Image (cartoon, rainbow, N blue to C red; front, side, top):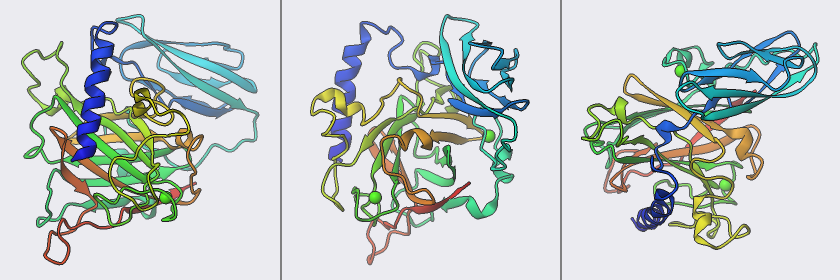
Length: 341
Ligand SMILES: [Ca+2]
Ligand SMILES: [Ca+2]
């Protein structure tokens, strides 16, 4: 696929550029992240932060919000603080902006998925009417994705994806693409290559598995060893409405190669997403609130679809139907997700 070759070329160029200053390459396993990336708490209430490694926690102003050694933040007075996590084994730091609101603010009753708990039980507790699923039929043209579930709130898009490890065997870099019709409109967006509705406005691109060369010089023994933080580069559709192919960037920002890293943020910069690998599945959370600072977002419903790649070729698409003479490729429209709020 042409788009993949261009992405691969851009990756190769950027990899060369980064080698000199980053001996670890682009290995996101080494990157400290906090979940959630930002939070709100009422005076007298608490909110739990999590980090993806052992850290110490500190607050920029404990009079406004204090944090304990487990990442539990307590709101003390109206205001804003920065909570900093510092990695025990390195000097890496990551921050979370916490806004404390005055008492009387009722804590949101909307449940969120937790992508730092090494558990999928939280999915069972979500309101079923807001959880959308797709399962790959046996007769599909591509079997690399067994199933996905999607759940969205005003803050997050949460995704549970199950790769098919018969098709995913080379863990050097396994791209997982998320295509979002953010405004729920066929009058904007494009990319009809893998779905019948060519209306995607946003493309999120990152790997869900990447081989950590330092930890596993001979290659990962298991998918868990290759599991990779999903912090995507985010691209905007700028081809013709309803078009196909590689038209993902923002010409209003720039035309140069650096823009291939996305319309708003790129890999390894501001956290857009987070993820964990549990029981053969990948739990991903995208910060919908942050996407909304750049993209038009429908506030009640949106469309979403996915592909997974092996050696830069798509081997799985969801949703997908059976591959038939009437519908070669079995392409279908993206899933529709209602936002719980
Ligand atoms: Ca979970
Ligand atoms: Ca659209």
